Length: 111
Image (cartoon, rainbow, N blue to C red; front, side, top):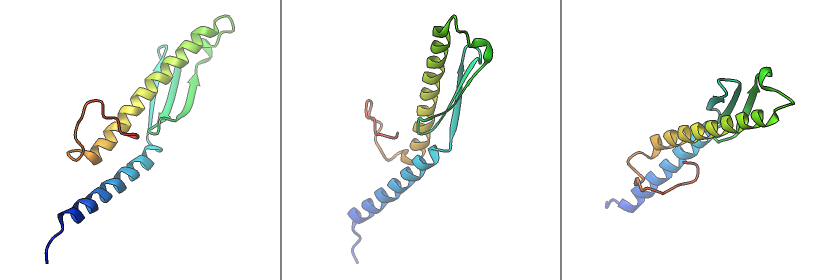
């Protein structure tokens, strides 16, 4: 009986793909929270980069200065998305570590 190395590679690739899909599904239930304005605005997102919650302290809500609140929300959202992306990448790297080459600029969706 002769072993088929291509068959083994295909099976390994399928297992990796299954693991990656599992991690992507799990990311929906992993959350990160970031803040701006010293905690006046807090934003939570899941690992799929979906904003799930925004908390705003009453003290920062001012009809005379809506731009300040807008800036705080934008800053908190951007920080949260950045943190969520890093978390998602770390989770995917656990699955793909040593398998996919570390090529600068190679962005694989969901990674």
